[in-house]
Length: 293
Image (cartoon, rainbow, N blue to C red; front, side):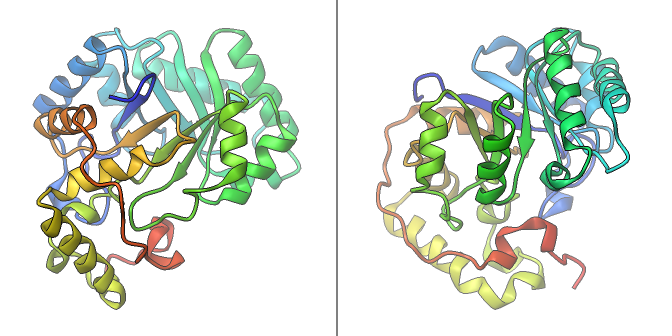
């Protein structure tokens, strides 16, 4: 495995469906226990959650055995009505729910709030929560590169960022600003490595919403077959080519799949050249998905 790379296991499917194929990725309590045990055991392994992920924080608290201090990255969704006191209370409430004393990192879940009038007060609350030891790091989860650029430039105290990047969404592969942030010791974590599971299933299983661009998924499948490797391996090999990352946020369908991911990350890279056939902006942004059609 790459030196000093942190792996965050996504927990949006702890007890409930998540992603493009919701019914196939719900984790039960046995799997949750197994995954959390691995996270406690392995120093490079962490958990990613959010106060908006239904029961995720509760289940982490229930099965984490109070051994996940500095192992949890959580995200908090804020509004224009939030202030210093409400942000602090939200973080304290989440800590109580996960039954830990401190987070590894607290990220604001909705980057657009940093363009609002209460942004300065929100950042001050995050800074003080870090000073008090409620979290080791603070930052923001973004969807667009310009959000990272603006927020990191205006609020230099923020040091953790999440951004989507994967083999069919290569918008930021050569982002020079991201490289500069990485060199300045800011941490950028790649999420949507498997595009919420859509890259790991047969294209025929995808919701009809993806139909206009199914060719991209079939092209990806063909690339995997031609190279004699799994979809999962190609997705992970692509992340090796991203030189500005500090780590990955990955969703898993089982503890066994987590073992497979860790194994493949440690194995030699097999794929170094990737197709440039990528998805449109509509399909790489899950906020715009209509999975009911």
